[in-house]
Length: 213
Ligand SMILES: [Zn+2]
Image (cartoon, rainbow, N blue to C red; front, side):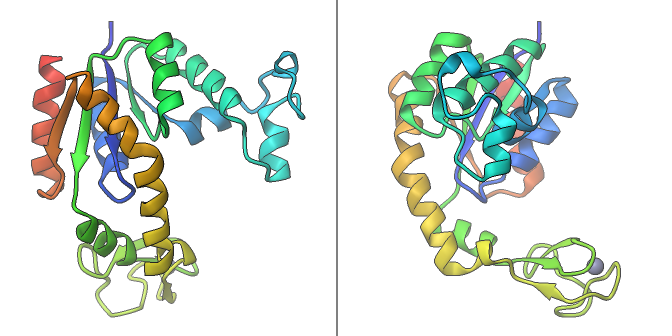
């Protein structure tokens, strides 16, 4: 049976990158809340007594999908996976408690990155206005400042990546998700990884934990 891995970390800590690589090298399913939602858009939730009968209606109306619906969808995604890396869930302590009810985790990893490093990573992102290619002013710069290598388009900073928005996102993260990190730390199952190494360095540490899990 495949392993059950939970990867925790702030926005910009490298969860997505590390999860994808873990999934491919250990033959696990990469489960994110967003992907799970998209895959189960038409799930019948009419018996849950909410405003809408399917997740799709929430997504199309722009309304926030209720926690109970997200929980149900994550449960379905985890049950269908033969081994998984869960990324971006649980976001709060209630979801963490729910997760304990529905599955057994083999390892819980936390990518530890300082606030200042997170801000630098997140505010340095640039995206091509024409083709959507991604750059970073420090870690993946284009050949010419502000110009896309792929298509010559203009590189812009998305509203999400301005310092003000980034600091807000990190504040929300600290408020909701730090209790989740502390919850697993208190249970004695949290493995902290130095997330400020190179991506390869981080992966070596992560892989070592997963191999032994
Ligand atoms: Zn481009």
